[in-house]
Image (cartoon, rainbow, N blue to C red):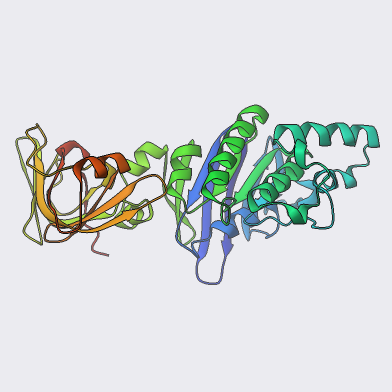
Amino acid sequence: MLIFSLSKRLRDFQLNASLNIQKGTIHVIIGENGSGKTSLLHLVSGILMPDSGEITLNGRQLFNSGDRLNVAVEKRNIGYLVQDSPVFPHMTVAGNIEYGLNARGLPISLREKRVDEWIKRFNLTDYRNILAAKLSGGQKQRVALARACITEPELLLFDEPFEGIDNKSHASFRQIIRKLISETNVPCIIVTHDIEDIVALGDIVSILDEGRIIQSDIPSVVMQKPGTEKIAGLLGNANVFHGKSRVIDKYAEIVTKIGITLYAASDIKGEVVAMVRPEDILVSKIPLVSSARNSLKGKITGIVERPLTVSIYADVGVEIVTHLTRESVKDMDLKIGDLIFLTFKASIVHVIKKDFD
């Protein structure tokens, strides 16, 4: 288990963060560029020293400002993988992986046994004697991860580990990490910008904003109920409406500033921000007969293909976006300029009080 509460004065703000990460748990941290994500990993790993606070890993204190305790990086037994983690291009895959054991003083036979285990674990058997310089980006990341894991770390830290690798390798690497954490039962922190990583990997997700954790919960709660408009933007909740709410028969009737009226299962009154996730919107060419209380008519202004879905942009007085499968777009024969109906339930409209700060 990793427990920390630490503070550090950075260039633009004071970083203050506290987390408790259980064994076998993947804790995903997201935030804007410059929010302190990498600095937080550096503080936990020992690359940076906190100004104050404590860090404890499996009952062993790594840092305690009150006791002037600061365990050196190399003695913390932490595996750290960064974006484009360096491998030694002149060394083979096996040599790269074994390098992590060189300072451990282990017998050659034991080192070779461990290298064999991790090569098989990460499906690198066919590349064992190939120079690292000849590997793809995804293969290099697997080698770097094996090198970090061969020392049996008590904690794994990942800083944007999927950047620079193709979609297929990205998906494969996610599966490797999920299986690895499950088998080794170590706590893990992953810093990422990819929303799909939150859903695919995260047991808990925390939002970091200027050195402060402003929301932390299981992914489904954070994704469906972002605490602020800023968090909604980070999480891809692209459809945001500002308006005034009144409650009628347990439903909020929200008259937006663009004249659209929305209905939400909420009891919040006054100036509000209403948010609708793109994947929660149904698209049709004729009005749907359903229990959904919200239906907006608009004209398609853009169609953008994504790796897994197609984004449909429509003008309903303001731009709104929804995500569909390629099959749905083909079946409906959607084209730019088409009139469509965007339907969604009151229960999926997330409402928060407007922040006037």
